[in-house]
Image (cartoon, rainbow, N blue to C red; front, side, top):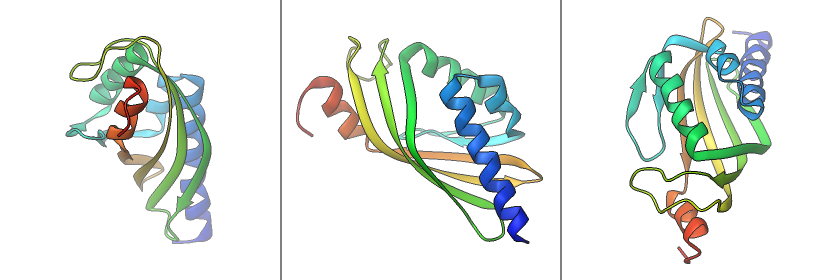
Length: 142
């Protein structure tokens, strides 16, 4: 593939993150393939836009997040993209299996890996250090 594939993949992921920061779930969904594979940090794989949208609703209830320092790194062929960023968040509502929410704030380094095909994101795999997050919201050292 060409440099244009690489720049198109980078632009797609940048649109995805702009939509994330704007809280615009429909715009995020527009970046995804219908059968998108979503690998949740510390969780399983969820397949399809409907489950991705459900996950976004859950996240909106429990967290308020903005991503900063986003660096998007596409492969030369534009079929895979890595992104590194900082998550700046507030824990709004209790999330099952996690400590109670009292409006705690947190800042975490994180990364996501994407697969791209036919101008759409076909895989979203996000990673961050859950133990660091827990330490921040509980006030206990990791």
